[in-house]
Length: 265
Image (cartoon, rainbow, N blue to C red):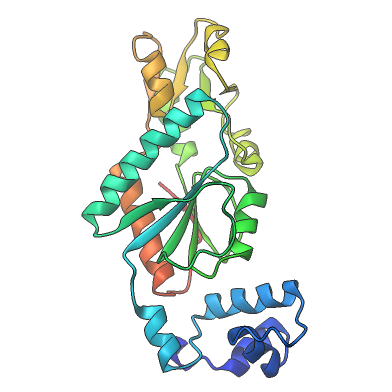
């Protein structure tokens, strides 16, 4: 049972001594512990759901009612518009769930203790790891491929989208239009699913597009192409996806073991 996890279990899983775990928990600065070891111990504590004592357990089970959000650093006006659309949608959705959303600047990557969970939306793997290394709150990846079984990652089911697009265009050729992303893992994931993918950075890229069939999945690009007669719009941002994200977030907060970390909606 998870409630019976002891400090010895943490030490064994982290490959360190019980004393080292104790020093990390109590933030003993007088003991020389490497940053790598400290992060490893904290990750194992988070994974196992270990609470050192009753006071810590009470602290861990209390809720702030706040969710923190990181997004990728600015790319373009189009990307900023999509991020704003996402933030407005998510803020409204979480409000209905009695949570407040706080946006954290990409320059703020140090420890943030005031949120029940931290969401990372469309960020690079390196940026996600940097945030994870500096925080103890449950961390969830949204619309980016992290491929780490310690964390939930929630992405759109692009394979299903590809099937829907083929049916919509009656097997005619089409191009998937996407706003530029820093998440190289998602780019690699999409390559075998779509014959033609075009990443858009600015309005000049849109103007240079040929007249063909387009699959669009982001609201900002759809606003640019909604009058185009050859567009299939399959939004990546839906209430269904938000509900799945919220379920993953609640499981992470409650330290429920992850059975399937890669969730496709």
